[in-house]
Length: 297
View 1 (cartoon, rainbow, N blue to C red):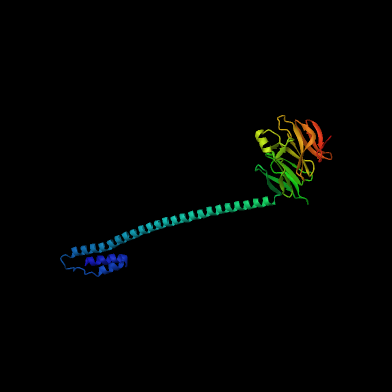
View 2 (tube, rainbow, N blue to C red):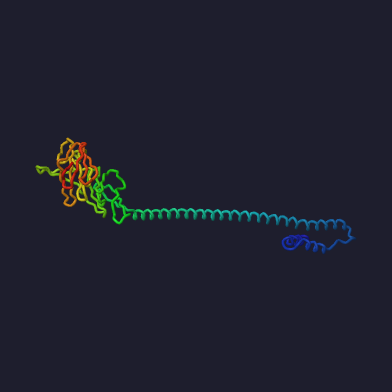
């Protein structure tokens, strides 16, 4: 009987309240007052009732304690799980942000490249190539109705001169002494005298001469006399080592080179062009080179 009530009390802890169990205990058969073991049975009955009350309470406390710990563990587990998820979300968010930054950088770089290409396309200049492979950027002016040449972007390894009308330019490579003619329409041609034929019909090559004597002056400091004629300094017609310089003239229309006579010296430099012709300083003496290939004072 007592085990029955113990089972009901335990069940009561899980479903009903303690009061319902006590009511059932009160319906238990009470010992007769005339029984010789009345006092002992009453005490035993009280102990049973007390046990029936205490045991469910202890069980309830254990149950609640166990469930509370489980709830805490579940909450902690959930917190760690959510924290892990939050970390993943934050990490993912960080990755997206980095991707966005990289994308923005790439977009900005692309925009800068496009802008530079557009600026270069709009920039009034063009590039020409010398015979030694060097690239030269020629600048021109489009502010007026007529396009005119302003000069070159860099003078590293080159010398140049602009025609009086500013419609053309001559560029000389100081490396191999080749001369390039360029007009404002971006047309260019090599006007270098490549060979020289002596009076006894012996041919001398510029390339071979400079190879055997790198200090030889074949064609340097080209200068416009007018729109159709260019003067330059050379040690031709001699191949000796006396280092005497002469003035030569090239006609751009017929591509004919001729020596300007009499004009020779140890050092020759060109100046400005005026009505008399091209200024030439020969060892301190000022003369003028004409378009016809003569020298005047």
